[in-house]
Image (cartoon, rainbow, N blue to C red; front, side):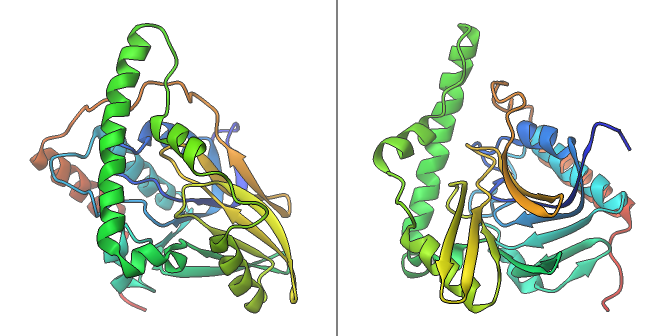
Length: 283
């Protein structure tokens, strides 16, 4: 193991959205190569089934999948928590394949304290009442990402830094609600009722670290953000949770298309999974 790896007890990442133009797989791969967690929690929307197409799965995205498999081989426990964009996996709730486990939510007891981890979409009324509207929003996000990629290529050629159009739009029109948004209040209320001192979610793509006092006691709310705009993760080390912002190579060019053809993609994925011997009999 490389000595420059940061050893973590738990690492939580969310909203990677592999198989979309928005995903910054190269930056995520650099982050994953910089840490060695005992447990890695993939907190939903890792693979984007809403936008998945056999015509778009760049090599950097496949490299992320390969690295996750290598982590499993090295003994890292990976818990895949399902989100709304990868909800097709929810029917596999409780399934285990070697060091990989698929769940809909997770409760960890660390150093005598309970942490509840889940994606967060169950508190999103739009997802449940008007899923078509959420999908239109996702499609619009994809279009903006394509435009953003083209703009950044031009900027980099001219010697300028990248811009993040969607992030700037959100900053302008969606002001942060303080101290707690309705979403955060709902999450914290349920966490307190479950006697959890910390709750970690994703879904909103808005990294946050807040504390709230409830009738049951203080609850810490952490949103671990995303890997399309903010490059953030929740890490547990030295007996505490931290929300970290990964800043290494943020100004790298956006993922190049560098496409695999359909046959290469599926052959590569099959070989990677087959060689790991992950699948074990049901317990």
